[in-house]
Length: 337
Ligand code: ADE
Ligand code: ZN
Image: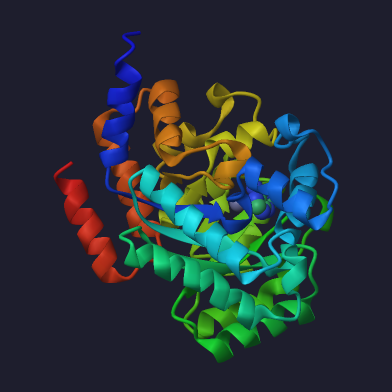
């Protein structure tokens, strides 16, 4: 391969107008920041710095999130993280992002949700004022929370009506939590009735049954991951018929051992079956993923042409919870890419 080709490809994909609909604030810590903050706080790290982001799978990864987020104990640190995430979006030419933020991981802020939200919002607002992309927040429940905790969070969100918040989300490990769709049904119903959008992690640590519940029980507008829907042909047909988009994260699924190789990843089968798919980074810093890299990976593995690449980018914009002005601007730019 000509040494120039990767750079040309990277630059072209950076210029592709697109949104990102599945990434977590929890996944935006750079290793050197964690090392520095851990030293200041006197917190021991589980592994040497060079192996810090070597995860054995989702349980180990989620445990690490508690440690990393626990270090972000001040307003300045939250501002630094949210601003840094916006910078990362701009580095991939992302025009808008829905960012998931799960309060349970951030121990220093428990009981101070409002103050925490203001700090995160300040970082994103500063970023936008500096010309970085607009971000909407999807506030997330953890799969292991109770029904009461879920409705309490939703009550808070509804009372606040904060302009930064666009959706209710649920993430975490379904393999350990078991079937929890019914437990969260009321919270999701309330959120939907109040005008919040709904996005649900399913079909990553759960099989097709998790995706069915996300749609039938939680009323998901969008599924985060959803890839294991491929194991149930009736589910694939339903997702395609109802045009429910999947926010797919190929590198995350490889690093966290959902699939052994990109060749065995079902994104292309799902796309060809008529399911609306977008590509995303999930936890970009911790999993060493960039949005440009995700597009490049799929183009290389599945032979995506420019037309397919544009169609996936279009889905990312249409599936996002951006306002209509932002969507229209991005779609216009995409048409002339
Ligand atoms: N929280 C952050 N990343 C996640 C993932 N890939 N699955 C579930 N919960 C998460
Ligand atoms: Zn995720």
